[in-house]
Image (spheres, rainbow, N blue to C red):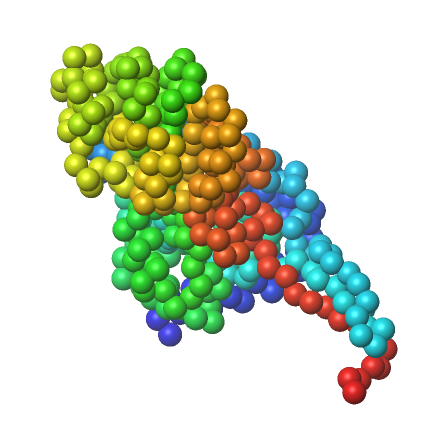
Length: 416
């Protein structure tokens, strides 16, 4: 056996141990880890600084990689929020009699061993563990090399608490910093029950192409907001600013602004606040012409076709002019990653049609796409945002980390 085989064998074995842990103990462990995060903030930040020191601050992933005292406090509170949720496991989802007076129950069960491959997001380490542990799933983590010191510190903290409760530390396993392990992990049939990639489209494509174990795709967000001809300009201005600049490095941030041609005369006003954040605009011909005399020359560029359908993860945004509502929907259908899409409009028919016809995990009317988030959706935290339709879609919380089995009880019946 090589190192990976040993780690995965231990992880699979731990699934049985998790089933025997009481709900009270599960919650006490999570509460203790939340407290340990706050007590060890300085140690965690020192490890995080090692990772940050290897990355230039203007790198789009720098903000994702960075931990701060405030962010760690949010992480700790998210873990406490998970504690308050009822267990998603062992619940009777359905119960009824079937043939020959047999009694059938449909009962929620853990998925088993969940492998998560992620890039520069050390917060994912805590989110994944909290949700997996609460739902009695083992997690096998393969973080990016750029967050290795951070992830190692976080998992060591978790392990210390687990040891206190005599729980096998293999319930959360961080794989070594070796990129070759990713492909082996994706081939680990019998050891890993499902893999969830979180990161760039390139990572997701790699996982999809090489995996032999089931995959739930998450992460890539190519996000549009359509300002239709009836949109309130002040509202549009506020929403666009928030959607683009709140945290540009996350997957729910705005990438492409679609503007109805009848709103072009208001475009300069809509994007004006973006100047303060130095947002670069990649504009099509019509919108470029409207902005050329008002938006700073250094921040305004001509768009090429590749800029539509790009997840920027930075202070860049493309702008596309559309002739009508149908053109906007066609553009979204062509370029969307099916993550989050929005319309700003006063027209109730347009709003209703947009929400009905746009194919995405989350669709919005007159608000910011930045709300696509497990905590904001009341899930406590999220293991990722699924952009597919099988098993789970959108922010994945505790319930999405379960499957079910049928339990049938009889009294000696045999089928004729």
